Amino acid sequence: MQNNDIKNWYNSVIPERDAEGAYEYDRWFKDPVQRAGYRLTKEAITRHVLSDDSLNPVRILELGPGAGTWTKLLVGHFPDAYIDLLDISKAMLDRAEKALGHKERVRYIESDVLTWEPEGKYDFFFSSRVLEYINDKTKFCEKIYRVLEPEGRGFLITKMPHYERERFLGRRSSEFHEGQITPGALRDTLVAAGFIDVDCYPVTTSIPLFRSAPLNLFFGKFFARFPLGPISMFFAESYCVLFRKPL
Image: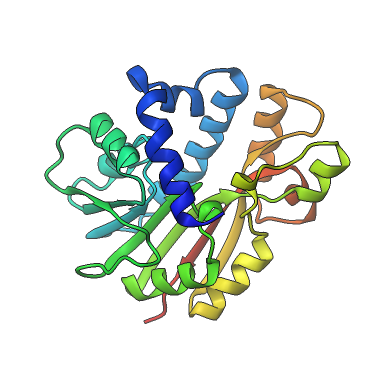
C-alpha cells in the first residue's frame, strides 16, 4: 500500500469516526484488552523515554501523533521543548490539535515524511505505530538520520509481524497491514543509515488463541524487562526500538 493510500483513508474515515473522541477511545480504551495495550505502551514510553535523565531535548519531532495520546506525555514531561507533530493526514493533525488544545511550543505539519524538508534539526525523534504504514523503510531511516542533530536520539514503536502465525491460525492480513518489519530487519536498516546503539524491546503482548487482558499484562510486564529474544518476539504484538546518531 502506498503512502497516499494511507493519507486518503485517514482523511476520509477519521472525520466521520471521531465523534466525541471516538478514535482514541476505540484505539485504547473500549475493552480490557485495549486498555492493557495502553498500559503496556505507556509503561514502555515511561521506561525508555520519560525515565531517562540523560534525555533533555530542545526540539522534538513526533511522527504520526494520532489523537495526541502520547504527545500529552511528551508535552508534560518536556515542558520547555519545542515539539513538531508531523502527519500525512490533515484529519489526524486536526484530531491531535483538538485533544491537545493550544500549545505555544507545539506545531502541526502536514506532509509525507519521505518528501518533507524540515526547517531545522531535532534532538529527539518519537513515533508510535506509524512505521508499518510507510512503504520505504530504508528511505525513512535515512530521512530520520538527516533530521537529527549529532548525538540526537530516537524511539519508535511498531507492529511485530506475525504473518506465518496468522496464516497458520487461518487469519488473513489486509493490505493495510502488510508493511510490518521484523526487529532484525529494522535494526539492520537503522544501522545502514548510520545509527548506533540500536536496541529492541517488547512493548505489548498478545497470547495466541486467548483474548485475555490479564495474560497480556502478565507476560507483557515480564518480557518488558529484557531485550527482545526469540520467545518474547513470538508473543509481542508490538516492539520498540531505541537508536542514536553518532557525534
